[in-house]
Each structure stands twice: as structure tokens, then as C-alpha cells.
Amino acid sequence: MFDYFRRPGSRPLSDAISTAMTRDGQTTGGADFSNLQMVESSGRYSDRKVTYFRVFDPASAAQRSMDIKRYKDFDVFQGLIVRSGHVEQDGTVVMTRAVVVHAPAAAVGAGRAVPMPAGAETGAAMNGAALGQTVSEA
Image 1 (cartoon, rainbow, N blue to C red):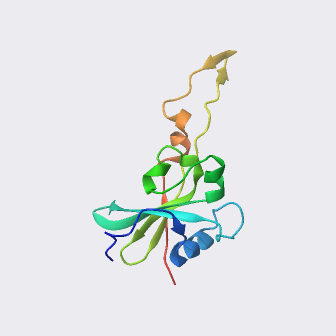
Image 2 (tube, rainbow, N blue to C red):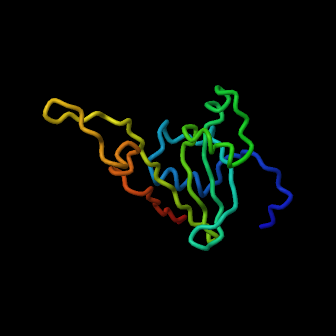
């Protein structure tokens, strides 16, 4: 409850997050979560207190000579995040869907390049807003 004296750093996945990732089935690399780590950050979602989390593979981070200590360490290296989401106060785990970013493709019309519509270069036009899926503990 009181995390004032807890040092920041990565830790193994909680049982609730491992269960949510298994149920979600969107994680690549099989169902072995023993090698994954997570970092957390307190915050607010829709005016409720929640704990945000990011799951990552420490071996991938080590290959890039990164020492992950805090949630914000991933702000620059989003590609290292395996899954992310938040945990509600009642223990409900909400997994966040990643927005797929597509490289802009040149469309051809009447033998000439046609500019892409606004937003299409980020994948936002195809994916809409990032969606969350609620996975409750049984």
C-alpha cells in the first residue's frame, strides 16, 4: 500500500499480470513469462488511481546496453516493451493494445504519385485510437 520507500527498478511479473497476458494471448515468444520483467508507475486513469506497468525482456534491453530502472526509461525505446497497461485499485488488469505504425506507401494514380491522407503515415487512420482490453482475475 505504501510504496514511498520502495526503490525503483524492474521486478518479476505479478501473478495477476502473468494471468492477464496468458488470457490475452497477444504476446509473442510463447507463454513462458519467467524471463520477463516489469516496471511500474503510479498514476490516474479517468480520475481513478491506477498503477501503470510496462513488461519487457531484460535480455533484449541488455543487448542494447540499457539498464532499465524506471517506467519512464521506456519513453524513448518503446520497441522494447512487450506489453503494457494498468492495474485498477480492485486488482483488475487492463492490457493496452499497441498501435501499429506502418511506413508510408506511395500511392499511384494515373501514373503519378498521390499524397497519402493525413494520419495514414502513422497508422492511426487504420487502427483508430489505441484500445484497452479488460482482463479480470478469476
